[in-house]
Length: 225
Figure 1 (cartoon, rainbow, N blue to C red):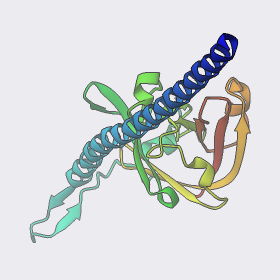
Figure 2: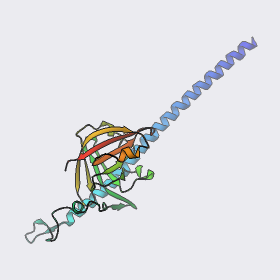
Figure 3: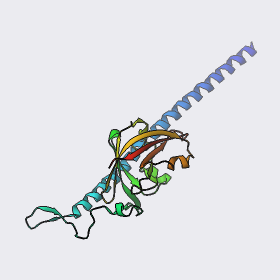
Figure 4: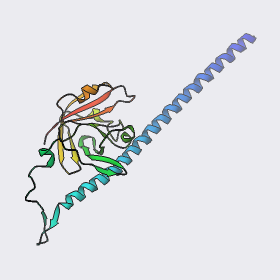
């Protein structure tokens, strides 16, 4: 009789242990989901604040090129010595201009209409930077080899996998030059496939890690104009 009671108590204890463990795992999963949602919203707000300041800076630069004519109408002021071509066309090796906001340098604005994204781009990549906005991984828009990495937040690059061939992305540098690209290919690379990421004749590459960091969703673009 005592052995039966012991076995019954043992089964109850095991059942209680597994129920408790299951509840703890569910709670942990809910907490993780809540944190990821919070982190995504935080990143969206952070990048949104920066993008507003970058667009204001671009607007000021555009306005600085316009003056009032004697008739009161706006006219573009063009120097006789100014080339018809942007500086980067004549000197593609030049450094991309930056706008400094809160001590961080940004090279421009990336927009992907199909995903409803308008994002600032850091001049250099870093893990803390990726918490705020996508970062230049390497290359330059001027040399037609720009690579931009972003976190897999929904508000950043989390939906790159949803892009289709022919979708458009634009990059505006801090001099107001606009580069328009068309998506041509999507591939999945391993986390340490650096050579594969940087190889190929692609004008623009965007990539993000999958959840867990097991691979990289990589989207390639060709320059339209």
